[in-house]
Image (cartoon, rainbow, N blue to C red; front, side, top):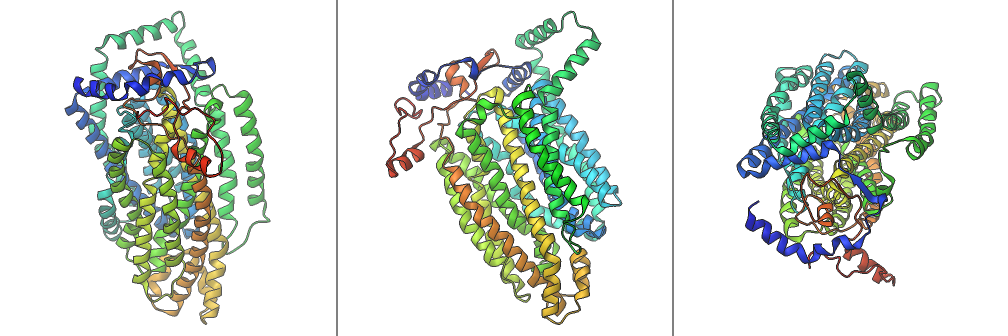
Length: 638
């Protein structure tokens, strides 16, 4: 940023920002000292002052994300073929739950470890896990081995993606935050159309095993430009006197300690800093409750068996243990209490759970529904679910530019929640009403609904994350971002669980019922339920056997979409509870309070409540409530 740009920015915001720090006392309850890791990352970020290198850096992230998006699109499709080859296709949602639960617990750990050890070392660690997971998945001979590889892959992939986001956050101000994060979604514009032919080609010429294994070699090569940029930033930063000062401070802190004692101290610090027990309890809580719900149905109902009851009991007993641990014993709780008490944080976190829950209801079984239930080919069945991401990616970039001018988020988030009522209504009609003959009509309707879903998603995912980031400082920004992403993963797991439970509990019986109604041998329900992709090769579109399966798919999908539509109501209410901070030209609002900028600043305010929420004030006036909080000097756009 040039000197003239800085002067213009400071001149525009100076009047409103000068009163910002007067709104709250800087008591010890909301003061935090900056860690060595954060101060080091700020020094690395200073190396992005050169615009040419900044563009190169962002482009390297785009290349890495482009490959990652194609990879995850392909892997998500091949999961379906893997479970089909194991003759356990109904476990598709269970695999998704395992992946989401592991990722949800891993993200806060990545945030805190990256503050301790740096973004790049953690990125390399995640990349290794990702590669090993892909190799195990590609060579798995049963669903248990596949799930083991999926665990490692989920941790690694989630870590790489969230660290990309941390890097973009570090390099951007609040005003341009959404636009910079939108770059993470930009590759979807291309991959939506590219992934379908890639999947089709791999399935026709190779196999799903090869289609998974190839990414263990392709993805690391695509990430090399990003790693070269990081290496250059480290080389430049190490020449700065501030870097040497940080090393001296760290050496002083370790003075008099042996190598063994430093290792033990570091291990203890990592153990408490990432809240290892808390992460483990989250995995146990979500895993032991959600996974059994998807396994209890199918051809044989198993609700009364010990293998279903025991995990459920353990899961529910884990919740109070988790609460007690976080409240009484955790030295660094996953969510600091001072943050969780603020509506700007807890409403954003709640939205993260609910919106991903809603999103997963109509999308969990999109590929088999389109392929089996709507006579789509593999390219269309792969591409159609990705239309939501395609529309979201384009609209998000546009919204990013709009917010650089409008500079408030909440109104857009509320609009997104309202738009989803329309999207889910379309899903209820087109996915829940099929005759087994007019496949194209329903495929086109689902495509339109996917576009509407993606358009609404534009105003919910990233904008809500930005809204939460405006409520805290740089020290806690990565943690807040990772927790929001974790809760999104948890909501996704819950959505997979509910959709999987509805699918496994009702689909087999529904297929059997429809076959009996149409005079088809009901024994065919076993193969239609367990190996649907094999079934449709024998019973083509329009046959009575196929129509029975199509009608069953439509009935179950209608129930799934109705659940999602009902959940749009609490989603809308939660959006009204968000804060509406002005998006200033600062990395975080603690720079506004402190009046300084850069790695030299050692402490800052944790929580910011001084937003001028025009929407909430309007609703208060509508119901006859007066805003007791003084609105003077809080509008940063004055």
